[in-house]
Image (tube, rainbow, N blue to C red; front, side, top):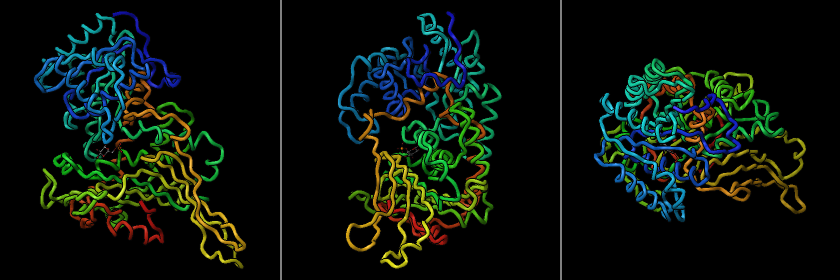
Length: 518
Ligand code: BG6
């Protein structure tokens, strides 16, 4: 082994963007969908941006019987298929062949059964070969496999000695979501994993944290002087967080039946948006400083009783309708879905935070499939100004003041406020002041996985979930899982292509509020 400097777990200096340190990337689930659709395009982008290690190797592990050449050809076919496919998550006009060959030429493949210890001996032999070729012994394992395999793979890696960090080499594992399917199973999975590796080796991914606009929430809040003084209960009336999708469950019926919208989206993606909005300022951008403050926000979030869980949350399921002029079937008629399914495709909930900043300020969260519009936003509604000076004018209704963080698809920030309509009368109208990313920055098409893979190679865990963050998130939604399992409250049906069920409107109407239109 040649000398290789260790990288501390929270090194953020790479933000100046230099190539990542030499390493091998071992992908479990190499022949699967996630690897094709997102990981390979992300590695390709890193290659284009010259951020991949100068010395690197990729080892794919899968069940499909094929050789390395076939896997390389398969990936090349997929990446070329993205050219001009405007509907793909990763869409490009042309492939930069040099950048792609730097990725694809390093790929080797081993097929095998991941519960078989022999496979890990083979992986070890491959890593030794890489190391002899000068790649070194840093290894990033990526688990793009079914959730039930996360624990067993990490245990097998550790048993084979593959997670052992010595001679300044690091061994890290990226674990996909869903991390557990409820509070108990997340705790058990953490225990199983942390018995054999240390927390600093585990990178629990949530791809929402790879989105520039999500990362920008912290920059916006803590890099500007004027937000912080008004970011609290004195000025904020309430917050609405929306992640609405036009896609249905597509070909993921059997996964979705066992998962549902709550598990799929809330304790992970929506809670990222929620904690980044609600947390106190961290002392630095250091991974633990940020994750400590997120943890505080989750801990201060009111944990519902079973009765509250019925009052303050809505679970919905879509029925036949039209989404963007296309006919959509009942969820229950989708492939691999039980015709009497009780699985929710929509969730709305009202959360409160018991701390000094947010006491009395509700956070309303909603997410759903087959809805009218694809939109992810955090909308902060400010309190009304006192109206006394308008008392002798035609202004009888105040204008709503909103700050909207547009996460996707129209990335930007919008202020909504009242302005005087030109003319002799005093009349106010809502106007928007908008900052749009694409007007200011050259946005490169990316998958969101680029930053995350790069950060993991550097050992920067700021954008990854720590065990306690995940467990606390599950703890908050556990009362909903429990009451819903008992069939309470009944599913609220909504038409595909609508803004969700009327019960979700009632949730806000009880507080005298309304959802923002989609
Ligand atoms: C995934 C969920 O984690 O996130 C999907 O499993 C969902 O159901 C997706 O569609 C949303 O991510 P994005 O990046 O498309 O907004």
